[in-house]
Image 1 (tube, helix red, strand yellow):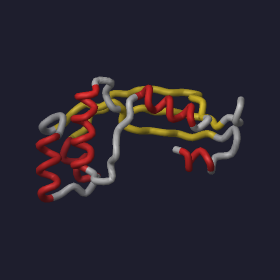
Image 2 (cartoon, rainbow, N blue to C red; image 1 turned 90 degrees about the vertical axis):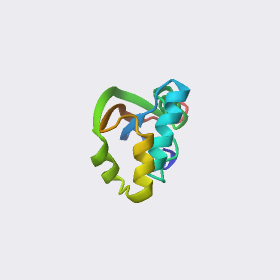
Image 3 (cartoon, rainbow, N blue to C red; image 1 turned 30 degrees about the horizontal axis):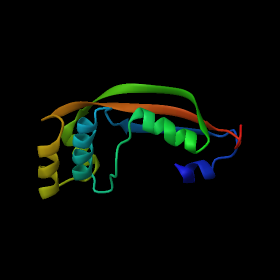
Image 4 (cartoon, one colour; image 1 turned 90 degrees about the horizontal axis):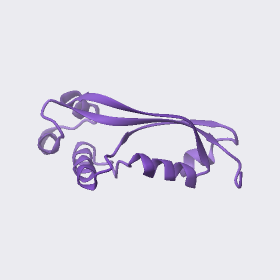
Amino acid sequence: MAEMTRVTRLGGTLLIVDQIAPLDPLAALELNRFEAARDPSHVRALTDPDMRGLFEANNLVAVRDELRDEHRELGSYLDLAGCAGAERERAEQLAPGHDSYQTTVGWYVLQKRPYGA
């Protein structure tokens, strides 16, 4: 986030689209375990309040935002990350649904404001 903000001019616009973690810490932990099994580069899905705090810390203001429920087919979602073999089997075991599942995706249109503004 810091690097995207750094290379954006003052008044510039950023679009952030990302999966949102549930507010329930146990549900978020389960989601993050699944995502890390699906994609080893995954660190942590953030909650909506965490995302907003990250934006504020980087001097970004939300111009528009929306949380959308998204239906995901498990097989194609695992394929997207190139998840195969033993890693795929582990991810399937940790998946929030057998063949598909619902998740929440946050869409945020942000504007870089001058520091101190």
